[in-house]
Length: 157
Image (cartoon, rainbow, N blue to C red; front, side):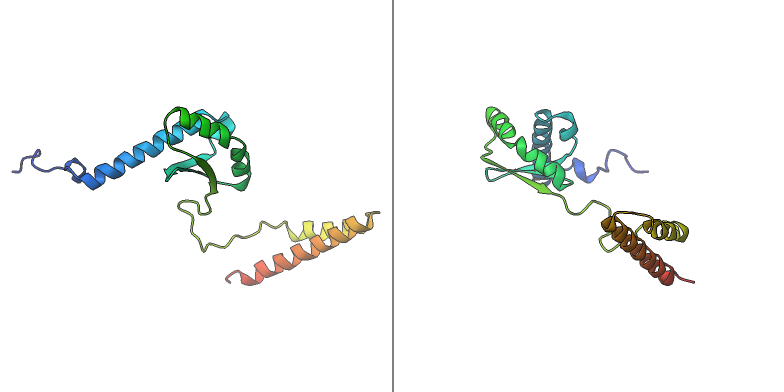
């Protein structure tokens, strides 16, 4: 029989490299929480990660829309971090381009209406008095019909 106390997980052994990375993660999480505290609630939830690197504060978000709104709060964030003795001199907002766990090569497929609806859009376009709207609806129905036909031909039998 073996002694259960004899076996230890790798995390219980002293490892300076692991300790360094754990410390860096804790610093980044603390920095992220401080940034989120100084933003309005709707915007704070959009900040995904933060990193302080060589005097530059990097803030990561999911979309360009949130990034543009975060830029308005950059001076406030810098002022607050200087009060807390963080050496941030500038802020750079970055957009995360790859979502975690999402396959990169997975093609997106359009959700097209039924063939009846596509035909109805085409026929209803003839009733429009505005020539630009009529032309746009005709182009839309033709494009959707072509995409629907392409999707039908690419499906396995």
